[in-house]
Length: 430
Image (cartoon, rainbow, N blue to C red; front, side):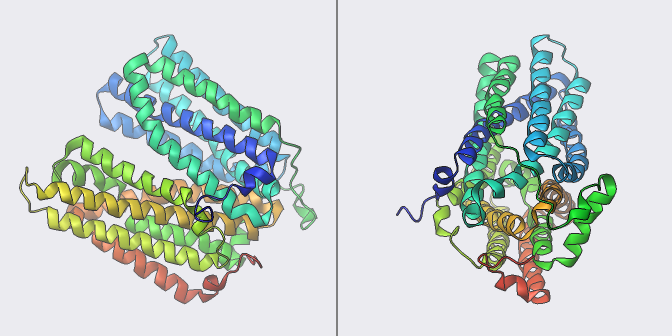
């Protein structure tokens, strides 16, 4: 049984990683509290779902721009310093959001600006932390470390929204933001305790003085000549662009299944639950060496799960409101999304590990920056495609078609680049 559960070896082997993991666990929950509270506050101030949606735009653009340039910064400077400075800006942005609430300012424009600032700092912080982890745990423990990170993230995704709603309802916005201000100090403390972590430029001494756009382009040039690393991005883009179902969940849960907001919440929580279960039982796959094959299988499972979800929706669509079979349909849909969330988590662990293991240290930050952009942008593209297609095909048919296209897409990618299926973690080749 212990070999099935999450591997705790990275926590035992590296005190620095253990402190970072614990600090991030608290910070992830606090960040989710703030995200939920900001959304609720903007809606309370505007009574507009469009205004709430614009929060996503305010966060996405700075995250994409800062993610690309932040990775270049992490490859030129001490990564402990970069992580500490960007984390301090994130903390300051949250503190200002809390101060905004305590002062009773009630300005949507100020909230947009502070969310954008927080997102920009996060765009620098995320690739830097991703580049730090290999130096703390070593190549052999990278899969287990990434699974542990996924476990804390999924826990925060489940607990954060629930706690955020409860706290806003019980103690208000100001105290909810203040909880995040306090918990984020744990992450800053963990980074403060890290040793100096300058990038290793011995493999590319000419890269020392490069910066700005040319440095970012060097990362893309590396991707152009390294098929295994490149495939970790392309495969995820295919999975998210064809079969990311989140945009359709309100219509499916609230209208087709007739469960209203509660049903939508169940469907959203189901994907997070799948991610959590994959992390909890990550001992079943973190010891796999053929990680390229693992990515392909996981993405195919993601596509099949989304297609099965769509098939249930097609079956349930003609049922009248109040039909008892709608309850069974909701349960079946939730089960499909649990499997989909687990499959996506497995894919993410393998893709992250391949990226970290097969990328030279002096390029880690830049490639992690591209990873942040893909992770942030891929689902947004998928939501746009799925939402547009559903207007013509309906939700059920769109989900089935998207799942089928996902499976076909990953099969085509593996046919075009069969070497990815033979990628072996014991001999990482980019």
